[in-house]
Amino acid sequence: FNPGFGGGEISVTSQNNCGVSNNSRRLIIHGAGELPTTPGLISGPTDACMLMPLASNPLGTEATYSIAPVSNALSYNWVVPAGANITSHPSGTGENDTIITVQFNSTFSGGAIQVSANGYCGTGAARMLNITARLQPGTPGAISVTQLQGCPDRVFRYSSSAYNAVSYQWTIPAGGTITNGDGTNTIEVSYHPLAVAGSVTVTPSNGCAVGKTRSLKITLEECAPPRMFTAVKPGNSKMLTVTAYPNPSTHAFRISVKSETSQPLKMQLYDLRGQPLFEKNSDKAGTVIFGEDLKAGVYFLRVTNGSRAETLKLIKLK
Image 1 (spheres, rainbow, N blue to C red):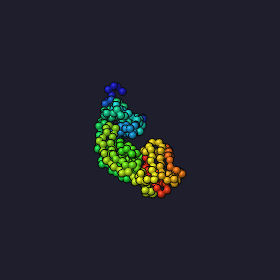
Image 2 (image 1 turned 60 degrees about the vertical axis):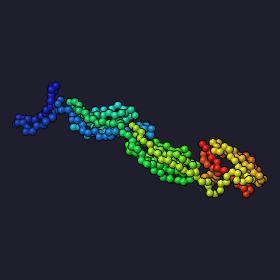
Image 3 (image 1 turned 135 degrees about the vertical axis):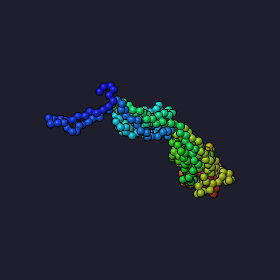
Image 4 (image 1 turned 180 degrees about the vertical axis):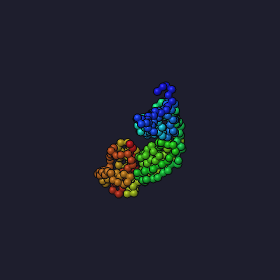
């Protein structure tokens, strides 16, 4: 073909001594002036903020972009902007390369995805899709509260949501522990049995920005001691005095018992449910050291001396 060939057809007929066939076979040849058409609209997300990496999703989320097949295309050229990478061609390459998956990294700040079709005689015009990275999370709604479990092991559920948010950062008052759902719009929190005061806050975020913070003040009273015995404050009995040091303690407790009688002593340790954990009998008053192996929490030590009894609240810290 000459350099200026613009297209046409090759035809062939058959003949013999009696004549030429009425029909011919034809083959259309595309010339230099017939480039592939511009691909149709690119389908896929146009804001990368919901796809970019977060602490809770360090790799980010893949996005899929696709076009309809272009007539007479032999292959396609996909181009993504800086901060984005093509991770796969799900439908294959060549004439089937109409779908790509893309991952955006934390440096992406916007740009266009482009695709053009390659044909027999060249490459057609490119189709573009602008991708932005400016989506702000909305302000979280009011934090809802549901109590799942009462004293002594109090558990509460907190929930809130915001549009355009991928992750949620929660803060809770001292004395609470997030046991489930951290990073999502719903968490469960366990509180120790002591009094708690402070705020629960939630802040939404996506790959581009951090939203405003919603706050909820909470106040929890100290859980009451078990009903199986009545707490008696130190000093109420002239014949029996019980003290604990240190209290609260991060290790062991030093229990000092003074009594004006010679009757035997009984020491009983209970948890907040009233379940007995420890019992010790002694012929006389004195000092006992124990509790180093106790878990963090609140306990009640009941000391009985004849008809007299004292009950101390012991607080074990981590």
